[in-house]
Length: 197
Image 1: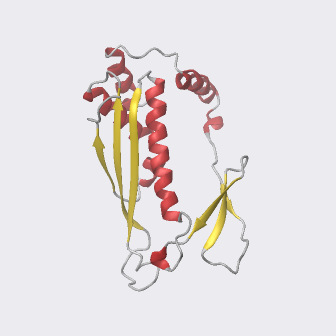
Image 2: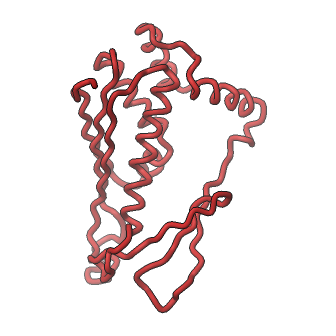
Image 3: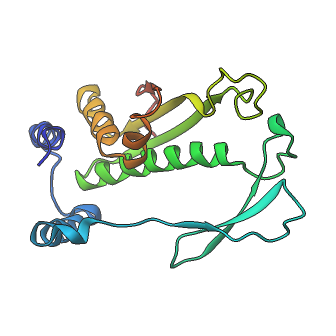
């Protein structure tokens, strides 16, 4: 068990809110047993594919997300590099990936520990200097220079210390955040004083 998860459980037990009957707890308990018996089962592969169609149009494509579900998603090119920006671009999708992973991780951990969330909002922005990809300035790196997260969360009957532990645990458990933080700086502004609804 990770140190963060251990501390989170200890803190939540002190707050008398760990009941271990939530949907996330029940599902993950079974998975934990399987993965302990056979660690190979924990290795998963996510997938997306672009099959080039309408190759005469360099500004739009379709990515199919998830091998089993085959969900089509239109993608455009940002106007900063000559596109029409009439569909989400790959940078938007990168931001969406981090925002959705962090928010769903927060909700899963909250549910696992029987915390009633009353409000969540995660907004992600990414900064890039496009002179690098356009080869205008060869000293400008090609890639995002930084990302920023605005995270707002409120929960019923939870003090700030436990709420902050929940947020730290979410950052530690968010696969996309942990992947990206190794390659570029990510700043986070956390707002926890949203009124409980």
